[in-house]
Length: 278
Image (cartoon, rainbow, N blue to C red; front, side):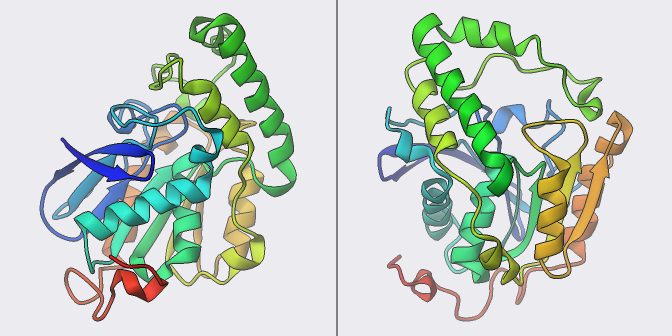
């Protein structure tokens, strides 16, 4: 495992395999090592890819600060793009991520669409009109952890039924985040939103959207709106564990249909193309 220094954090990452780079992100309070158990590791059907997994700031083995603004989605997109500049310089990449990971990808892609050969947006979170209610939930969660500890948050979480697609999977109840950082991470999530719809509608990156039903934090309405906005995007909605199990193969087929241009990269792509220095 390596460590990458970014503004205010060190990001823990690991790389395996060879070929075009595929980046696997994770969701809020999770980490790279948990995605397979949750059915959200989209690398399982891949062949001949260089897989990059990393823990978002404050999550898993990455460090962070108790500063809510450090965890808004545009800041997480900064981290992703800086990490790619260091580990995949000049290369267009495939990328997938659930919830917070999907939001991170959208912010990175509207800023630097030439960086991505494809996007797979898994269970997109609340956005726009549905975001305010979720922000209130995050604020209450932050206060619960501060007042009663992370154990109280875990006990409340046990009362929430999982979506039907996750019925046969073990639920990770304990966040992959320290009690010290968790309130700031929740507050940061409550401060942020997806990019404006008109910016998303301007995307030309091949996009696969995978959602599941009956999850108030990841409503199908967000997935359907993204499908409507992003030209040529594909949408699949899972209602059962068996349908969820098809997702890695769907992603592998989608990536095979959208190979990286010119082998390992797009001619002339550099970090300067989005107005920053490498």
